[in-house]
Length: 69
Length: 156
Image 1 (cartoon, rainbow over the protein chains, first blue to last red):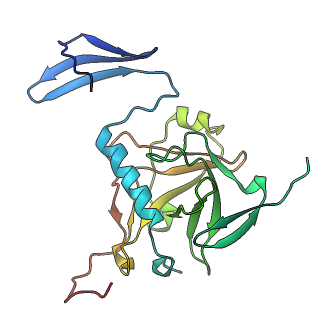
Image 2: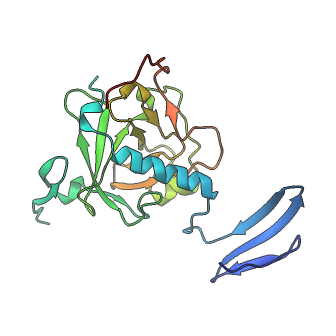
Image 3: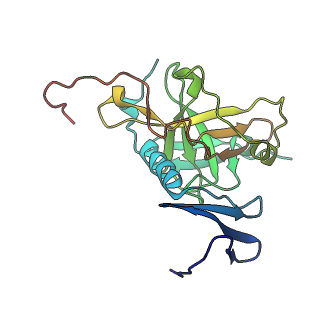
């Protein structure tokens, strides 16, 4: 993992066209701004992983458990 | 264009014949499973509101989905204009929405729906997308039946 240290209002540029800006640091929270092309999805990691997990769970359902009504 | 009949051997359902018109295309795949882009929607037996989203890229993979209004009449996910446009949907066009359903083995009353990651399909062009809702209104594991008090252990 590449580790960089930034101050408020400093940025990181990833590839071409993705920029992450540190907007504010308040206590334990860091507010980040993200500029990315429209075709690049940007999400909080835990939400993304939860959805991935539910997708996998939905693929493991046994047919006999599916409600018929 | 000649519509040739295609078929796929699936693990759950055996061999299935379909035509290209039946294929639902997720340009960006599923969340966390972005290699899975082409799917069929298969009915569950009886008059069930559930469907199986059967992968054509990976025959062993099929997800249980259901129309969310079956259990949550007020479900109204905040889908962005951009997501609609990506699917070719105008604001007056009707989309088909499914959510994934997870059912622990032998416990249908413990079913949960993922209301945070709805699957939106444009029936006019069969383009689809699984959308990650950015606000936290909805649950990723939403129970639909009241929790039973279990007495002793259920057989698996």
